[in-house]
Length: 262
Image 1: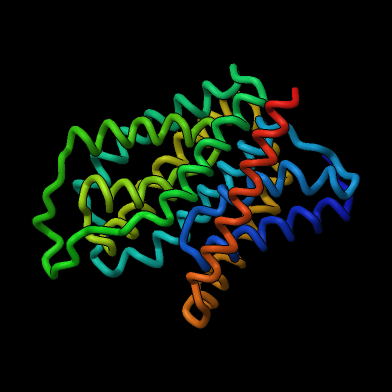
Image 2 (image 1 turned 90 degrees about the vertical axis):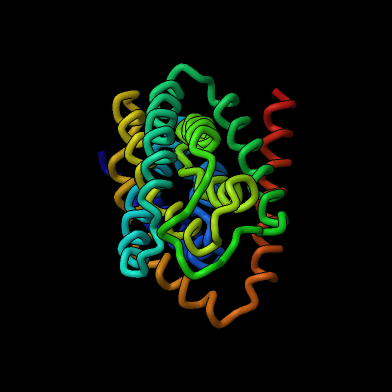
């Protein structure tokens, strides 16, 4: 498939900006890139990707972004094996089901799922983050049934939109499972990576993967995400969170309006 040079540059820019913002704020890039991929290319007169295609491109990109993030965290001993096992197994089953099942859904159903997810993400960013930050993380106790059930649900909905659900997984761990913050962030990367395997496999089997745009987005995100993380250390992240929430809410409003006006 031959792609126009302008579109390649635009996709790279979307991947770069989206990943840089997610590196700064520490949430998965797909919540930002989904609306960018949906609305920006047609605004510049290029191809308009369907919601199916956008969610598939997001899924591939998330797979690589979380893989690189996991390498950064693996040294600290903060990834809790038991937590990753329980939530990982449930989320990979759910995300595969959602990823594959999305081929039976209409574009507006996928957009609606995204709109609901993004709204939850925006609200979750304001919730007080609990979780005991004590020294010994090895004897971590949590409700395994609740963890498994919630991870399964997160997997299904995030599989549909090709997001990894990390932006919901972390608050769920902090607020509901009372996991220490550092452990939640590190473990969620591993869980998100597992989830993205299921989502990507589901999308491949559903026949939605677009190889060229996916590769461009992956390259952009691998360069930009570490950059974003470096910048976040030097700037006021609270201000950044507000900007991000404003963007998410604006997108949600646009998607709801699109759906309701059909």
